[in-house]
Image 1: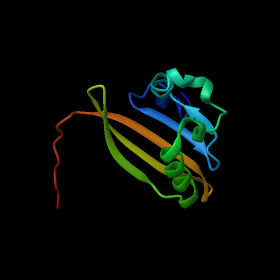
Image 2: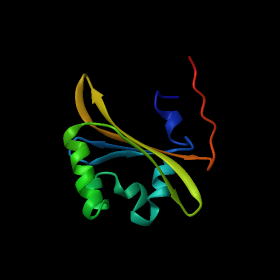
Image 3: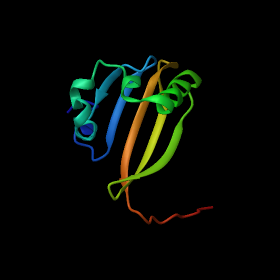
Image 4: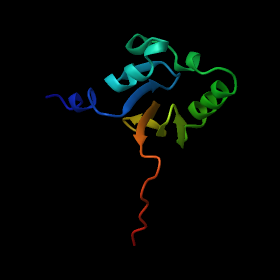
Length: 113
């Protein structure tokens, strides 16, 4: 097993792009999630092309500002946590990782001291 084998079948969608938005990698769940847009064939294309209008502008701002973006969505009765964060290679900004995890509609929240 290589150090990244675990991610292929990880039950959350994982998509990685470079600093310009070029998709570098997608796991199986991400390819399935974006199947209507091309799935794994999106690797090598610019993810900005998948975001129209205001969504594209926001994504461009995130790439430029190098800041994380975290929110939840609900679509077709499925609630997801979307976590978009910069990633770094040798201390240098290298692009973004997006994690999309299905979560229950109601979820426990614990405050620990």
